[in-house]
Image (cartoon, rainbow, N blue to C red; front, side):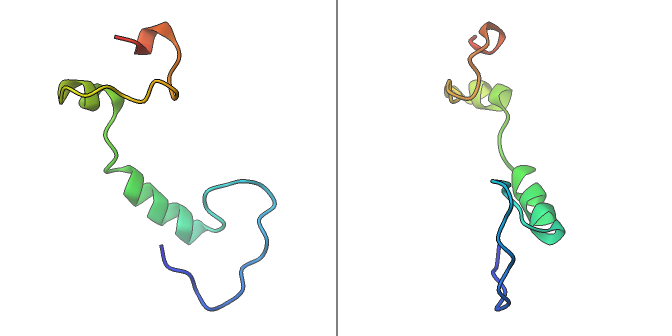
Length: 58
């Protein structure tokens, strides 16, 4: 994610993207993030802080 030389308006909330272009780029990055199921299949443990429901603790 590159920053432009223009001063960007202050964000009104804590969103991860301040405009549509940032949102599209973030979506591309997120496509490559492993799901919890993929993490388990690779023999690792997913982040328990993200999922505290019993159904995720396998």
